[in-house]
Every structure is written in structure tokens, then in C-alpha cells.
Amino acid sequence: MLSLRGTIPIPPHAPSEFDHGDVERRSGRVFVAHTQAGTVEAIDGSERQHRLTIEGCAEASGVLVAQEAGFVFAAARGAGQVLVIEADSGEVLRTIPVDPRPNGLAWDDTRQHLLVADVQANTARRVNLQGDLLSSTALPGRPRWCVFDAARDRFLVNIREPACVAVLAADTGAVVSQWAIPSAGPHGLDLEAALGHAFVACDGGQVVGIALADGHVLGMAALAGVPDAIWLNAARHQLYVAIGDPGVVQVVDTSTMRVIQTLATEPGAHTTAFDPQRQVLYVFLPVSCQAGIYAVTDEGAQQ
Image 1 (cartoon, helix red, strand yellow):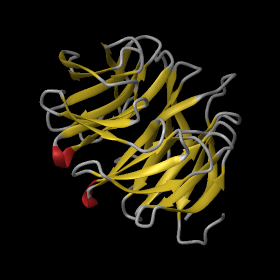
Image 2 (image 1 turned 135 degrees about the vertical axis):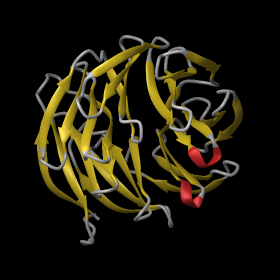
Image 3 (image 1 turned 90 degrees about the vertical axis):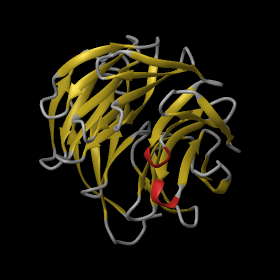
Image 4 (image 1 turned 180 degrees about the vertical axis):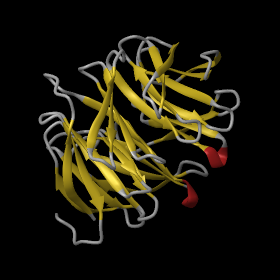
């Protein structure tokens, strides 16, 4: 289960609002979008301290670590661009112009291509590290989060309305399938690739499990509110779901699609980052402007 082990202060900003975060697994560094401040904040998870502030990310939204390549991508929703950041130094190497309001990001490590989903243009653009446009695809509606399904060589993009997952070919960016989701507003998305499953957290207060083979629904779990970020812990077959109102993280057992733990965090805490190597979940707390450190343990659940 998840157990609070401490907090890491983040430089305050009034108001604070965090968006997506991710962990550089080799070092344990945590990167998170600080939307109101227009920055990306880097945290040393092992030392439990704030490491640096990366400026110039207007309305910072999506953050994604390309683990093998050693880059951090950060969507600047207010500037229509993506920052390419060196993970070790935190240096911004370049900015890539994209569509007006980029948000969701997914990385094809084999081709070294980045998919950027835009919430205003309703597009998915593929670019390379130099910023060259490879394809631009019209999506069926406003995109939310997206992932790369490496085993099947494709991107998956959540669409708010109509409630569905759009499946895009990795080599062309073309929409090759569209899977209906039986709950309003698909948002958070993660894969249990070894078992062929995906999980979609929806504004309708549900997590929907689907089969990666064809998108058919495997099961659903009711949540305590409207979810945002989700992370799969494949080693435990658990899904961590952040819910800003009332401010909780819920743990879903993916084998039974049942909520097995609910932890109070902080009102407005709707986003997290998971370190699978160290089995630590970071919860970003906007009121107190810090990151909560939750270790995965074998202790009993706190409902």
C-alpha cells in the first residue's frame, strides 16, 4: 500500500497549480510542470530536495521523460511550443514550435519521434528532435493524455468528446482505429503492456480497463471524484489515480478492478509522478506547494 514518508518543498508561487510530472528513472529525479509559474521544477527524489527551476515554459502542462534518450519534454501550452531539456543538467537545448496549445506528449524511442496532442487545434503532430514536422493528424475531438504502445508500434490518445481512445500508427501518425469508452471524458491513460491491458480514467468518475488487442472493455471501477493523472505499478498490478476534489489518491487493483486504498492528500492535488524502480509515488500539492512522498509498502490499507 502507499504510505506517506515526507514532503519536498517547491519554490512557492501564488497561486500554485501543478500539471503532469515524470521521473527520470536512472537518477530518480522528478520533473513537474508548474503551470501558474510557467516553469518546470526538478526535484532530487533520493535527496528529498528541490534541485532547480527551469524557466520559460508558459502555462506548463505536459512533462515527459524520454528514458533512454536522456531528454525531458515539456509542453508550454501558453506559447505553442515544446521545450527539449537535458535531463542531467536541466538545460533547455531547444524549443520546438507546434500547434497553439500543446498538452499531451508521447515518445517513440525507436524512431526518436515525439507525438504532441493539442487541445485547441485538436491535432496530433509528430516531430523529431530537431523539430521537423513529420505528420499532422486531425483528431475526432479534444485530446487529453497520450501514450506510446511500443509492443504494437502505435500511439494511443484519449479524446474527451466523443469519449474514445484514438489509435494512431507510429510510422505515419494516421488514425487507424477508434475505441469507444463507456464513461464521459477520458483523461488519464496508462498501459499494463505485458498483460495487453490499458486503463482510462474518466471525468465520469470511472476507471475503465480495456484490451489493447481491440479496445473491448474488461472492467470498470468507480472513483471518489473526477480523476486526472494515473500511473500503473506493473510490479504490483496497481493503478494510482489522483483526484483533485476532494483531494485523494485512490489505488485500484487492476486484477479485480476494485479500489483497495484511499489516501487524503490535499485539495486540488490532481497530478502525480511514479518511480517504478524505487517504488515511490510523488503527489504534487498546490496549496502547500510541495511534493508528497508516498512509498509502496506491504503495510495494511488506510481506507
